Image 1 (tube, one colour):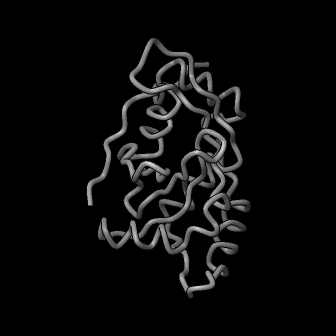
Image 2: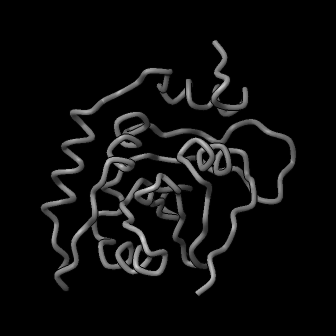
Length: 159
């Protein structure tokens, strides 16, 4: 089975993680949405929840996508775990990123076993926040999954 949506290596990595076209677990996405809406940080910060995030969680949530086999790249490919609760305690950080970008931002998951936190904005664009800075991973979750799992160089956001 091939997918015109993803390059062959990325499609294979997604399939090995349990993804298939049409995958849609809206019940789990709603549980995550409710959990994030209910969370309030000690400083009073709350998460944003919006359709682009819920749709990404419904299609890819719970998957751990391994690095895709690919030719040499500038950055090592990484595995991605799509689970917004990895960012539960990042309400302030994600709120700050959203204000800087002039949009809402919600948690998406993590890459490299917690080395970077992934976030999605109201337009479906994906970002990675790690100890070295904030990065734009692509205009959609599809593009971000491809970039992360194949080792494409992200665009660093400037302040």
